[in-house]
Amino acid sequence: MAAAKNKQASSRDQPRKVPVYLPTSNPPKRHLGFLIAMAVIAVIWFSLLAYLALQQVGTI
Image 1 (cartoon, helix red, strand yellow):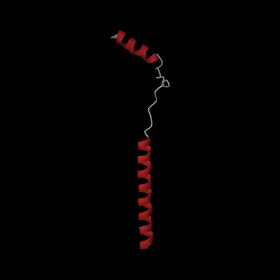
Image 2 (spheres, one colour; image 1 turned 60 degrees about the vertical axis):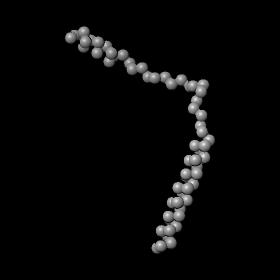
Image 3 (cartoon, one colour; image 1 turned 180 degrees about the vertical axis):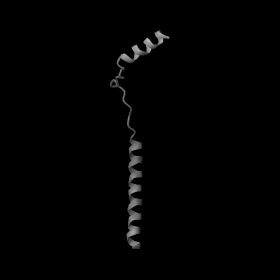
Image 4 (cartoon, helix red, strand yellow; image 1 turned 90 degrees about the horizontal axis):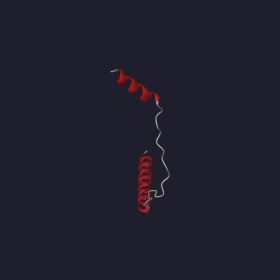
C-alpha cells in the first residue's frame, strides 16, 4: 500500500513532457478546387444577403 502511494507521489513530482512538433518535409497540399468552391459559395452568400437587404429596403 505504501509502495503504491510512493509511486504515485514520485510520478507527480516529475515534470510533464511537452510534445515537440517537428516541421515536416511533406506538408499537406492546399487544393485549388476547394479554394475556388469556397470563393464561389461566399459570392453567392453575399449576393443573397444583399438581395434580401434590398428587398427589405424596397418594402418599407
